[in-house]
View 1: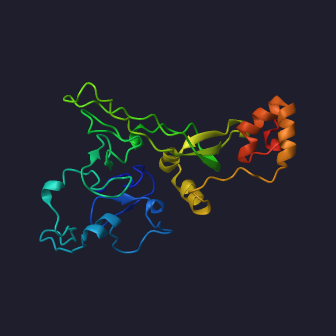
View 2: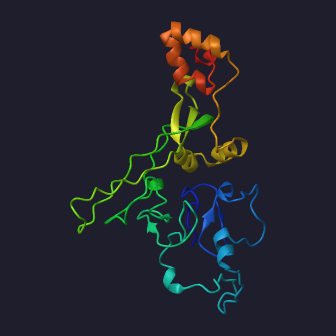
View 3: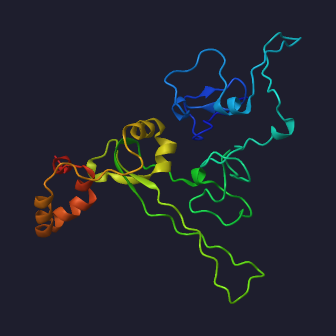
Length: 258
């Protein structure tokens, strides 16, 4: 039986099924993505990487074709977690989510973890908050503040006079300013990259293709900077609107309530 969610984003919907393993994928989540479903037998990227092949066997009772994994280990069939880190795509010692197939290196998490946690652990995808509505369009992105550092416990046998270990610093993550469907520009707000990746795959992938994802847009939308600066000094309300909306490409006329 195939899984009913995409191996990449862990979401359901219209998915294509691998013919050599239980995995399934959205076409837009493949790298490179697909524009249409493949014809005939298709093996997913994981199977291609592992060298798993399609073999046809004849069943004596029904004469149907059966899938067989060449070189598979039956003992590993029970564990459906990824065999590589979701962030860096490398293998090794991985921390597995208790509610989905995702796996991570503890140093690839943001912020990193100093050690494998005890008890149940939920990955960033499973703890990611849902969007408040349907995204109509992505307006712009910026680098957000890094998450709070993770404290590192002092070793039990450490010298009391030595300073405490330095906390593990997090990395800045992209934030996206979005307009919500059925709402005015007054309701535009910031969402995380992971929220878009999970809930708006197609729109997010298209935005990534069309925009530089290394350097955020400058925020220069062709306005008169000197005129804007003078008006901000005279008009606190305009200054507030500039900070919240205008600097991100939203035009004043779009904010008019009719």
